[in-house]
Figure (spheres, helix red, strand yellow):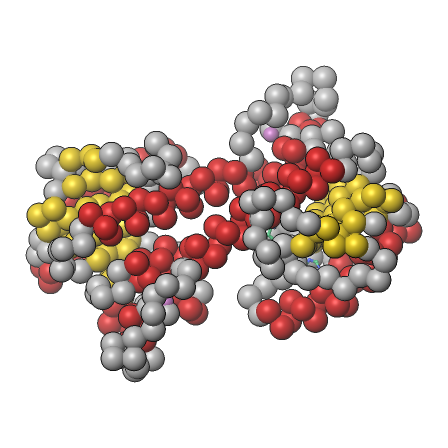
Length: 182
Length: 182
Ligand SMILES: C[S@@+](CC[C@H](N)C(=O)[O-])C[C@H]1O[C@@H](n2cnc3c(N)ncnc32)[C@H](O)[C@@H]1O
Ligand code: NI
Ligand code: NI
C-alpha cells in the first residue's frame, strides 16, 4: 500500500503500512519473467515432440510472439474468444480456434487427438478466486490433448488427474507459474 | 520474425529469418526492467528534495504504483487525459491533472513553480517517429518544472536546453530510457 492510496481511503499517515511489499510493477515483471522462463524450459524439454503447440488466451500476443520465436518450426494454434492482439503478434486465420475454450478445446481433441507438444494457458484475469474456479473447469478439457511427454505451462494451478507437476526452471517464481507433464 | 508470420505473409520457410532477435515478450520485459531501474535510481538520487513528483501518463498505473511504493512520503501528481488504471493504482482526485499535457503542464508551472523532485514520462505509443515529435514538443513544457537537482526519467529521448543527461543505473538498457538532471 502507498501513502496516496491510504490518504484516499482516509486512513492517513499514522497507520502507514510498511512499504517492504512489491509494487504492481515488481509483480508484473516477476510474472512475465516467470512465464518466459517456463516457456523456454518447456520448449527445450519437448524439443523432440513434433506435435502442435497451443496458446490458450492470446491477449496482447506477447507470449504467442515469444513461442513463435523459440519454436519457429512448430504449428502454433491460438485459442481465443476475440482477437485483439498487437498486429505483429496476430496469428494467421487458419491457426486460430475462435470462441470460448469450453467449446474449442473439445473440438481440438477431435481434430488433433493426444498430440500436443506444449500447451500454454494464460486465461486468467485479476480475480484469484475466479481464476481458480476456471482452472478447475478447464483442466479436464486440456488434459487429454497432450502427447506423451508433452508439457502444459500455466499461470494458474491446474487440476489434472494424470499429469505430474514438474520443477520450475531457475528464473521462474514458485506459485506464479506451473508446469505439468504427461 | 517467426514462421507463422512469414507463412502469413506468403514468404514461406525458404527465406526463413534467423531467429536470434528478441521476442516482443523479451523487449517488453527489458523495457519494464529499465523503467524500474531508472525510477529506483532517480528516487535515491533525489531523496533530499522535498518537492512534488509528477507522473506523465498513468496508463494501467503500474509505474505510478511503483513510484508510490518507493517514494511513499511524496505528493505524486498524475497527468492524464483519461483515467483508465487498475483500481489499486488510481490516484486520488486531488492528485490528478486531467487533460492534455500541453494544457496541464503550463498550469502546473503556475501552481508549483520549479519545485519538482522527479518527473517520469512514459507517454509514447508504438510509432517511434510520432513519439520523437511528441518528445520535441513536450520537452520545453517539462523543463521549467524541475527543482535544482531534480531528475526527469523518460522512455523517449528528450530535447532539453538546460538539463544534463546522466548515466543509467546498472539494470537499465541504453536507449530504452533516459535520465536528465537540472
Ligand atoms: C491475460 S490475456 C493473455 C495474455 C498473453 N499471455 C500475452 O502475453 O499477451 C488472457 C486472454 O484470454 C482470453 N480468454 C479468457 N477466457 C477465455 C475463454 N473462456 N475462451 C477463450 N478465450 C478466453 C481473453 O480474451 C484474453 O485475451
Ligand atoms: Ni503499497
Ligand atoms: Ni521473429
